[in-house]
Length: 240
Image (cartoon, rainbow, N blue to C red):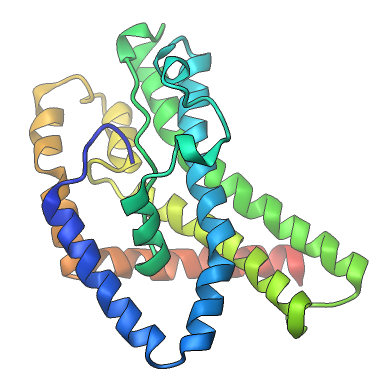
């Protein structure tokens, strides 16, 4: 997610969904719910940090010094974490980092470079999902165990699988072609309307469109099958 501040309506929706998630999970099986939330934290931190770092790094390499001057070309999580976005991912299942600000006028090839910056975050999440699936495979070979293990080893596999899953969630969510998500900027550059008035007309109502998609369950209808398909593809291709 880039370029836009989060509308208050969006925050309200996230808080409502978070409260529902807490009631459903924490009251049903508190100890299991708390453990699952602890194990999911590394995936959230890694996914959000690397997603925003990728935006900043690519923009900087393409000639825009803005991310560098703002201290965003770093893997320090504190430079990239948006606390509301982190909480949303923690409690609701999708979220965002602090948007990377860019100055497209510093790019040498504006349309191409804006496309590359927009796609960098989701590409990073996909690479991380693949990489950590291989890490799980290597660790399983070394330890001689699998994800059916119990105790500390079982929790380790669960945490690693969460890292894979969270990165897939971030990738798919950010590819939804609705502003302020990266998917909208990607589509805008592909169809060359990123510098036209229609871009900003749509962008102006982006948060409301996204709120509507969340309220009516459209984001869930997109995320669940796509993430499940990609997750199963990685597991069946690499781990099995």
